[in-house]
Figure 1 (cartoon, rainbow, N blue to C red):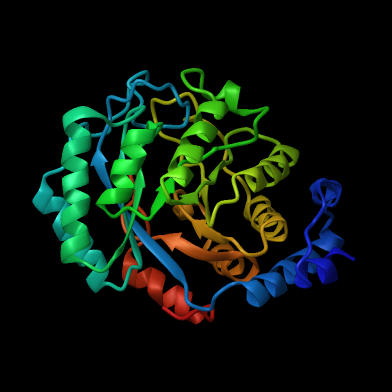
Figure 2 (tube, one colour):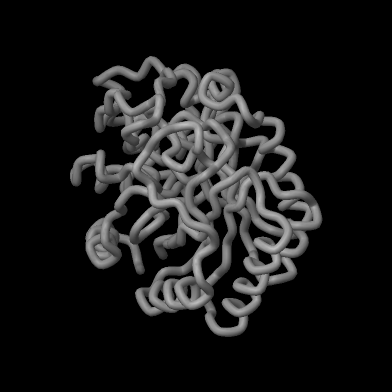
Length: 317
């Protein structure tokens, strides 16, 4: 039985994971309880919290069909260049006071270079001096030099989502490839940064593709997997995508936990589309981290509300 093997330090095989695509109502409780046991066994009881700032917004040349920031689509997003230094510092200080463990600058666009990279690195150097918060970055397909400069400025973790299964990604984005993402991840790792990589569910993929995606993330070996639930943005090609059910979301969380027993599985965007019951059940069966506060272009749950729910679900914060 895979339960005992995983708890003993082994792994779920690809065939076993793919068999879970056919989960039935009668076997679902056992799946969830097994995932919950694995979460308790391997995961820390201290909840892994992080927050992000939309450091550069809109006008992105990439054509990711889910994204409000793409210049290819007509959305109501506010577009702006780099946020002012004071805004960034104030946001980081606010999150540190709120007890948030990590803070990341996130920029729209394919990459960051030139004067923008110089400015961002200066922000990170100041954050390293003035705060104790753990620094992360999410800035697209950076080259080796840019990754090294971020690491030298104090960034400890780099985020680059694979987004979805390899056989589904080309239908959602044509301006860059999964291979380019893997190259960027390898560059970040060479520069000495940890890797955070996950994706979005509910973009039209099948349950089998979600399981394939979980298995494919093994080659990335991230320390953190953010799971977003699609928040359809008016003006994007996915604006009319029907929502996932709570059961589909919870099945995905449980399977990701079995495939990745030790990784932090992180609530990310789209949580407003999940019922309060399902959010709490997800915290039981696999989710042990979250992006907290306001998200990039949609509203996240408020920090204090999050903290209350997290503590009620048995985590330390």
